[in-house]
Image (cartoon, rainbow, N blue to C red; front, side, top):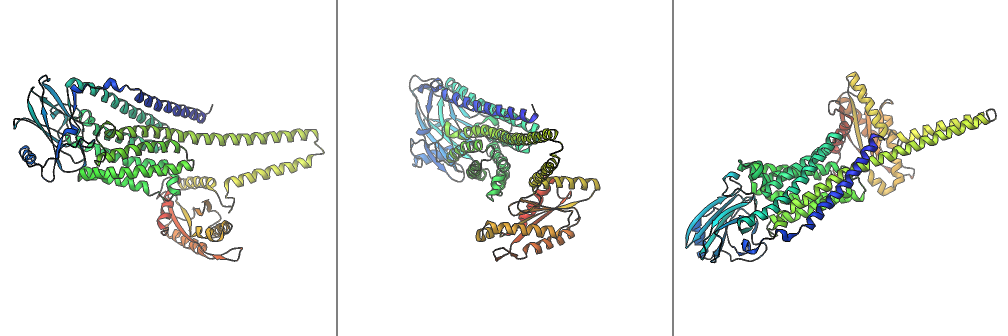
Length: 618
């Protein structure tokens, strides 16, 4: 069994295992008995819908000013809406107020949780009979070990006496999303709830770690940078999710409040940067076909600017930008994936499913961050759920992509083996006939041998030359490039690769028909052959794009001279068989080896970029 077959079988097994893993995770989540994690109402009091609110734009105020604002009627009465605790992306200081009347039989110790880890500043004031009895401060701008209670969320301890009246004030501000779900817990009930939430987070990060290691091994085995970009995407997104869930401050940087504060938006920006690069490399052919090869690099650059804005200028502007760019990114990736699926590109089916999951998660979390959806475990963790499914499906897409490529190679090898076997059988039959009728069929055997040679030559001609123009095709061009590179390295010389793309050729096809377009391509091919030397290589890459390998040119002056000759030859009028005269333009890009590129592929890409830079606007 060959190494290729072994790799294909292994990848098929990994894809099947991945589907089983995904199905198992979904069944696990669906089969969780929610009642096992329910907390009795007496031990958990949700205060979010009971809070009176007050927005303080500009400079923040103190407790005395907030009490004065309440007495003057500035506070908004509790709305009892689901979105009451979600204020979106705002730079205002938010004051929350609730009155607590304690019954006779009341446990004295309570824990108040503000269940949004990335809030910058939170001040709690417990007021009894008009006088503050306790002030506590928390937020992700202080280090984890300085919090009142060390927890991934913001926890405050309250000592409540029975038969008493308390007023609770919370002052909250944040440069990012300001959501403040407020829950009053008994300590044991909070501990029970934490077990469930930490177990779900363990499943999520365990899955991300497994995907990261899996794709890192794929990169080490295949040396494809695509997998390294994907590993960077997973790592940054995992760090961003850890920042949103409060795990960065608890486990990664417990003594560094600045990095904890920057982690959510900064890490998600970096994840978007690498994610856009991944989409561009994974769907390389599709953006080029749609002439959208600029889209993902532009989105990647926008994410990079968002990261710099977050770190060095304004976290608030960075938080707004990352939500809006993420919506555009997910929608664009889904569109390109859908086109790739229509074109039956390798791995496109998993890619589309992945971005449907991610787009759903991004849409929900962005609407939550903008204050349009309530703050609850589903909306607050929508990006984690969507990104977890997305990264698992993208990993399957990578494996499926390799699987399809290997299957195509195996099919080509099988066809080649079948043709060779047929040729061997033909030769053996000829030998048997020769033995039976050596004298009578000698002439026929010679003719058969001549036909066999001609067929083989014809096959070689068809395999390495363009059937329309007779120029070298991509396969022969690659061989000639490798040979030219070897000679240049051996002789310490350079050579030039030119990419010539016809302008206004589509108009000829549209106006005169594809037959006229074929006449134009044949004439252009003849003119290109006439301009260069016989030792130079002229190839047709497909469509109206031509490539020239010129080992006789060694400086930019020679290239300029030849470029002028090519333009004069190509742009001359062409007389069609129908009697019509047409004329095309040409855009030419050139690159020197090894000065501008160290390999044949990079040289071709460099010349292609130079050609597109010269091409006039559409």
